[in-house]
Length: 122
Image (cartoon, rainbow, N blue to C red; front, side, top):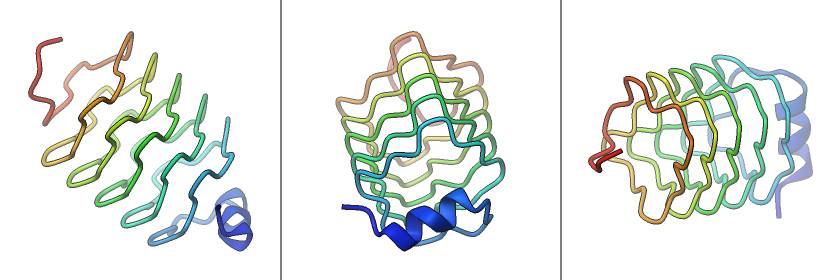
């Protein structure tokens, strides 16, 4: 379960959210641009409909996280584990998944323009 103090920190608009425990956090529709979640635990977190453009998700653990219809334009997922995450309908234009674990992740109807690091056919 997410650390409640960490969830408050996210919702306060802070930009450095590195290394937080946000497991199963409900962060639907948050508006956070250019924020660093690097190294955070996002396992099962719900970011549905969130605006998360140009955010740093390097090295996060985000298995089964929900990013449906989220705006993740230019976000950096290098070296992260997003296996089983749901990116259906998300805007991933210019996102970087180099070295990320994406097994069983759902990219249906996602905008994958200029995405880096996804080695499967679209």
